[in-house]
Structure formats: C-alpha cells, structure tokens
Length: 312
Image (cartoon, rainbow, N blue to C red):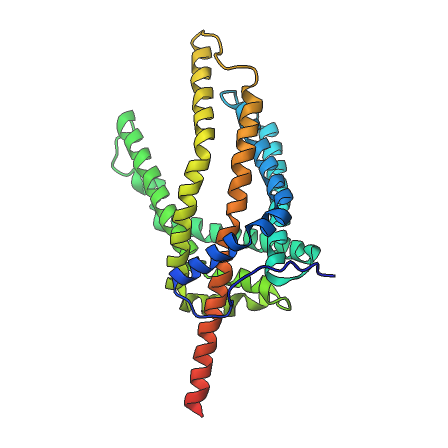
C-alpha cells in the first residue's frame, strides 16, 4: 500500500528554461503548502530538534577546553542522528513525487546517503593526491632560507599554508562542478522506481553534463534565494552567540555573567523555530531539482525523436 499523496502540479516531462523551472517548483510548493505541511511537519520538527540539540551542545562547550574523546563521541552521535533524520525527512518528501511507500523512499534515501559518502571519500582522496603532487615539498620551499630567522620561517609557513588551501579549494570546486549532474541522477533514482543507482550513474552523468549549464544556472538562482533566507533565519542565533561570547569574555576578565538563567533554553527554542522553518523551505529546492529532471528528460526525448525522424 503506497499511501499516495496527490499534489496539484504542472506537467513534469516538459522542456523548460531555468526561469520556468523555478516558477514550476515555486507553484508546486505554494499551491500545496497546506498538504505538504500536514505530512512533513513531524519530520521537519525532528530535524530541527537534532540541530537544536547540537546548538545547545555548542553553547555548553563554548569557551571551554576541548575534551577530545567526548567531542568525538558527541560528533559521531550527531552525524548518525542527522543521517537518519535527514533520510526520514527526504523519504517523506519523495512520497509526494513518486507515490511509493514511506519505507521504500526511506530505504532509497539511506542508500543515497551511503553513495554520497562514498563519492565524497573518493573525491577527497583525489583532491589531496592532486594537491600533494602540485605543491612543492617542504624541503624545496625551505631551500635557501636561513633556518635561524624565525620571522622568515613563519612567513614561509604562512605562504605554504595559503598555497595548500588555495590548491585544495580550487581542486575541490572543480570536482564539485563536475559532479553537478548528480542532482539529475538522484532525482532519476527516486522517480524511476525500477532503477539501481550504480546502473544509472555513468549514463546519467553523461546526460547531466550535456545540460550542465542549465543545471548550474537553475541551482545558482535557487541557492542565492535560499542563502538570503538562511541569513535571515540565522540572525537570531548569531545575536545569541555574540551575546554569549561577550558574556564569556567578561567572565574571563573577572566580571559576573550578565546572561539570565533561561538563556540556554531560549537558545534552544530559537534554534528549533529557525531550523523548523528552514527545513520546510528546503522542499522548494527539491521541487526545483524535480522539474530539472523532467526538463532534461523532455529535451532528451526531443533529441531522440528528431534523430529517429531524420533517419527515417
């Protein structure tokens, strides 16, 4: 039993430019926001609770000496919680798109997470290998430098650091741009329910690269919009962190803490509300990727039909 959720939506398989794609995603979100909110709010709340707990933990350890083992364990628990709650959240959203059951979509969400972690590990190995080959060795960079001059040594170390960071940043950006077609592959994996990720990856990547510019400009506009929203939503938390930091500085100088006793619970509530709104709004980018997939499929069908007509 799929428990299919019907949404009012435009035709999926239709050739669109980036503006029409964003408009279709916006209409899908705004025309169905009541239905979406009804089915999604518990999962968005779960995500907000997890990240709110993380913020609460950050306030707790802020300004204190780090405890390596405790920090590692808490970080690992947080990663696992984010992993599971995000898969639950994404799985529930995808029910709007493919009509499959929640367990089916949850399973696919978990698989996507695992594939993305594998790809991230592969890309990281490539990036650091390339960086190691490009950057000169420590012996080469220090050649001819008086080792007795600490100022020159410090300047050289800083220069090496900036060079390495620059190479890593440029290389990582290049790989991420090459992996941009992943959004098409992932949506295909959810929409075409009889597919397997490893079987569609290379073919999907080639198709996505043909439409790289369309994917890039559409996601760029969507990302800019979401960045503005994120900055607005994060403003209260930024103010709270700033106030807490100032309070810690005052305590370090011998002053009394000027924050009320309910400050930490207040921070949790503020983060909970901010993250809840944010995760509801992240459905819009997913709908944009949904229509990116539909547009690419329509364009590929047009090419195939044109080729058949030409051969005929």
